[in-house]
Length: 309
Image (tube, rainbow, N blue to C red; front, side):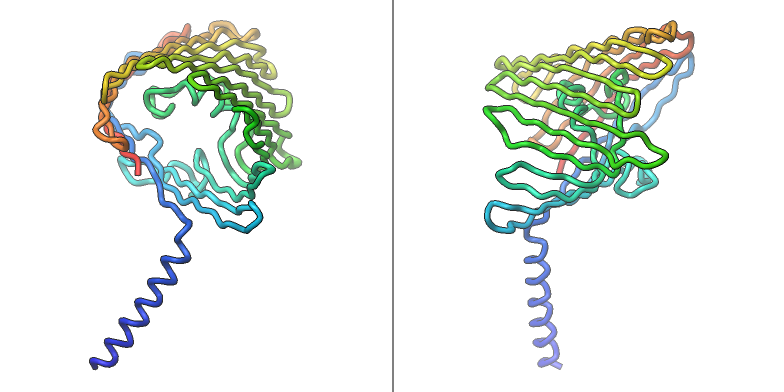
């Protein structure tokens, strides 16, 4: 009996070592983000628990030698209030499922992932809550398919990086183009994004500047969509940091589409974040979306907790 226990312990130790070695280059990460909100849509008010893009994921890489690496990322989105997946596909929706190869030439990515044009513009200036939940940017025009995507990301050239991607076309889906250019020079951060899907396209420019405790930024977007026409969207955002406390404000305005009357909208958010650590914060905000359509306005008072891991 004693000898059997020793053999079993030895085998368990060997298996544990092999498992740890096989997962040595894999990272588990995630975000749990939830708010209690008093929401008003038109004349109807409700108190709800609101999920804010909670997620968990795995990512890792293997050094292939000669400066070449293989990598992957798998990310799942879920509702923290009931545990349900936010998309029918486990890794789908706003999640990620990609494999990539990288080296001195840059990076080639294949799979399902979010538009880099969006990350370079609208997401970059959404400072207070990662552009999630009811206070996320409701005015930005997002085009393109995130699935069956092939993308190339360049190395950095003097602070500038380029990424260009497309979704593999099919008989029932339009060709897509996703283009992003980012430039970082000390406190100055600039971005450009362009998306095209069939006859629809959008172009956006972004700037952000860090000046001590103050950070401010914004973007301009021009959208051109079939049937409904063209429209211009602007957003300005700012943050003032006092130690662990952050004060946030942003305002956005989307003009009328040229062929659709009363399609303009305005959105603003005021928020405060209290960072309890580098990974955890408690926060509150008020956000409001105003339109020219009777009964379509939305607003929300919210308090919440976000924890990254």
